[in-house]
Amino acid sequence: MPETRHNEGLRVERRPDGVCVLVLDRPQRRNALTDELLLALGRELTAIAADPDVRVVILAGADGVFSAGGDFDQIATLGVTSESQVAEGLSQIMRASTLLWALPQPSIAVVDGAAVGAGMSLALACDVRIASPSAMLLPSFIRMGLVPDCGATWLLPRLIGTGAALRMLLEGRPVDAAAAQQLGLVSQVHENPLDQALELAAVFARHPLAAAATKRLLREAADGGLAAAIDHEAVAQAAAFARGEFADNFEIWRSSRIAD
Image (cartoon, rainbow, N blue to C red; front, side):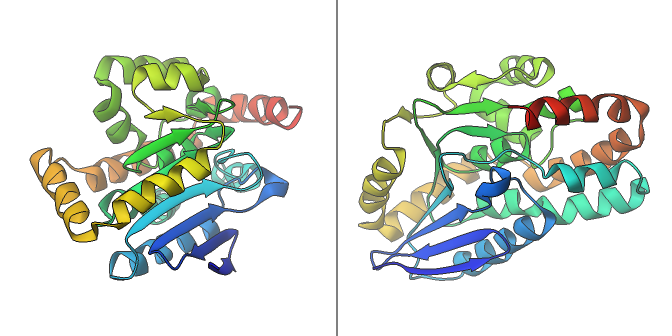
């Protein structure tokens, strides 16, 4: 049986086969991301990176939703906070994406239902994404007059190319499971994505040293700068929160999402 514990909306399930399942677990808010949850995720990922007993990491969302993105209540406060404070705070919480990307162990995102905004970015920071037929990736940032964050500007072009990434981020339209697979955003669409992820994780876990070395070699061959990209995003996002465009669009977007 898995060893399970909860921390700030994050459920951690450590299985005896070396697979650690991290579940975004705020179903009453569609697994929206709070500062506390992202910091807890960062702490967990830091511990996992140094733990030889963990061979594979799976990131999922509770109750048929990956994540609705940033928590609206916390987002609303950023429009009335100084840019320097917002930038500093964002750079801290968005480190979760860097830590996820930098894990020595292979990681698998189980995208069931919506992965919105920063939630989408977290899924993109995983090595493999398996989606359910109801999965939807939604880069909602521009709908609120904001810019992409949590590493989206660095991660998305590496998966689908700069042109396709720019169009996706500027349009801010939902991408369903079939389209996501066609674009290469997800590797597989499956009726039971968590079961499929556990099967794949078991394959990875059988050869932990070779899997980690293969991942490291691929990353070294395509070295870039996710951490630097996130720092740039934090500053740009702080400026976006301070502009009237965010104030004009956020409540409209929030109301439309709450009505869903």
